[in-house]
Image (tube, rainbow, N blue to C red; front, top):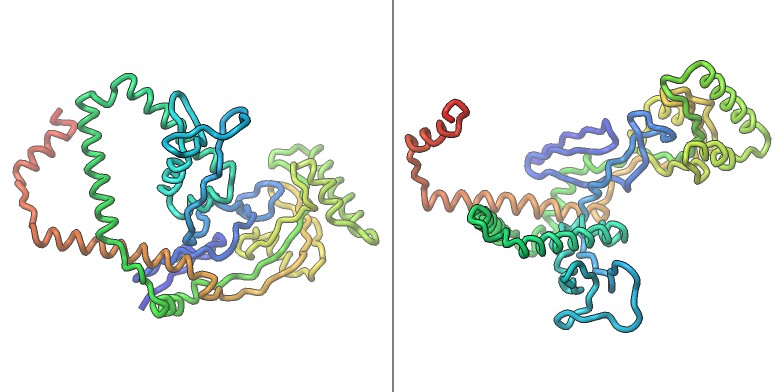
Length: 357
């Protein structure tokens, strides 16, 4: 039986499972701030992680990644491939770039495919590495004896890792639909999506160390906003844009959809009392004044198997690969038991202690 331990204190579910650890994202990235940070009313989201651990196809490399001014005519060729980048005296072909991207994990490839700026940054890192390799070659640094010894150790470790990945790879048909259903049913409680609230906010910043004059000015602004909001046909979005522009925000003050666990406790209590379209009275917190409008709500529900299937397959395969790796190594050690010279090892350990030097 799989046992779930759930922690919902910060709007996520870090789940520890005895037989299988589910790393399933329960919602899209949402804006939040547990530690007050204007003008948000909720906890700031982590960059993703993770984003979600959904299985992803490799990102397709752009047709061209250029540095500098584009030239007319067809692109130069390298071994039959289009040149997509150049640094120093080295060209980078489309095929090389595809291989470079393919070496990233599924989550990283998904992020690269969705963010051209991030993809460009990754290509720049590849080019920087090529420049360093040119320096290494020019200085023959890789021929130093100590460097050669370290490279050999790195090579051995890389070969062992790649071999173990192959030896411990789960069957291609794992997990089966039946396996998936069993794990989903056992962990259904962990897939509960809390209530969600679509909010907008007008924020009047007030630093903790503000003097009385600043406090009076902020309170005056809040009173003026509240008076305008109570007027017939008041436009919350326009007032939010007008006021929040001072705090580098806009978009009608919209915060998007937030899990109830992501909303600061002081604000959440007020939001729970609102009807759709209603607005709170000004809420004084340690970062300033918050006026919240409830746009819409979503009831809590349990995510369905189709929604979490990709993440679940990825996690189950990772867990199976780890178990197969441990079993493979244990079997090797059983067939070829190590023999240790304990005295020699003790002497060697003593040589490494500070007192022995």
